[in-house]
Amino acid sequence: MGSLIEVDDDGRVRTITLNRPDRLNALNTSVLDALAEEVRRVAEENRGIRCLVIRGAGDRAFSAGADLEEIRGLDADHAQAFIRRGHRAIGAIERSPVPVIAEVDGFALGGGFELMLACHVVIASDRSQFGLPEARIGCIPGFGGTQRLPRTVGKAAAFHLMLTGSRIDAERAWQIGLLSVPPVPTAELPREVAETAFLIASGSRTGLANLLEAARQSTSGPALEHEAALAALSIASVDGQEGITSFAERREPVFTEE
Image (cartoon, rainbow, N blue to C red):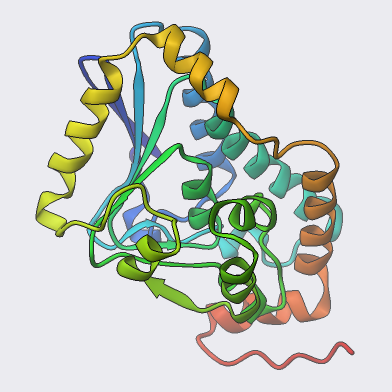
């Protein structure tokens, strides 16, 4: 088995690739820990890197979300421990003093969508799809989506996405403010990302860090703690486990809780 993330440098730009293409780059504990550590390493140790790019391996997904095989069967305490690993990784991205670009080609769903939301710049192919499907399986977004999405696209669009669990295409994502630039054809995505990354990386590392610190909205503290607790309870609930199981079995869930 290869590394769960791959790291490549091109001058002052470092690319981190989520490397589970057979699982649509689903986020399990090992991936989240590796991602958090790599972002931390760049922030604290590698002063030569001035821009990070996060992408997904393969040709189908940025990341299809949290690995349901890992959270299936968890009680609330263990579910919350998993969610906190997600908070650690995604929070490290949002707080990074080095600008982070999400290069999205394919699915960005659930936890993968939430990871994307924490990035400072989002560039996507025109075939990409976005969504938070947790409501469809009796759960809620737990990696900060309930906080970051309304701040990004506004209350109306955010609640529609979260409550319906529906997917949107790249053009709609651009219209509501999820993308930094209009979607580009898949063949042009690497060039668009590289040009943006090198433009960012031409700036002062200190200046970039100060800009991000000044502009950063707070998504820490009580709101995220409350979201984590509710997400863990949802995963551990009868309906949550039924939703996770039904998704794995490719059938409609049968919810029984009132």
